[in-house]
Image: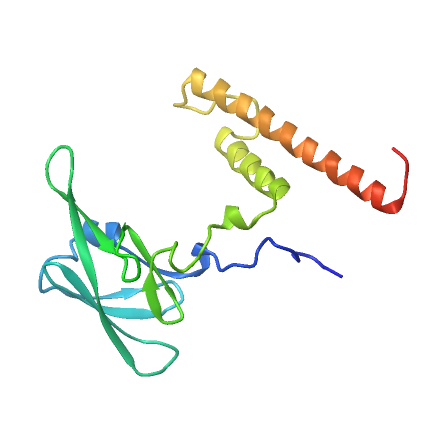
Length: 188
């Protein structure tokens, strides 16, 4: 009954393991000019052909070696505080403005519509705290020496945060031990 990684955590597909289109990268590279055609390639060697228009992108790709799919993803623009425009995707399902669209079952939509979650959301509370602790520890370094170019106030704040996370990990571990001992019928 229940093995490693069984239970409610880890069931949904994660954003980090999905193919994604990022409008911020496309805009930074100047690919969104009307009439431009480019190929978007992911690290797994999959690719998609994109044709940019004034208000939408036309995506053309073959899903699982099947027929060629082609559909439009509309673009929205919002003004920036100091001039210029920021470009967003309009999610094909919910029409909300999004910076990233993810592919699932051959269709692109936002993370919310595809019910995707981030890696940290797939962890149980103890593992999430351990993950946060290791990330913070990497940021601070191994020793109790302030990293170069970090303000002392920031360093002290992060050290306090490390202590809080460490206490949470200890509490979660202790509650697991207590639960395990109760299941075995042992007295505390």
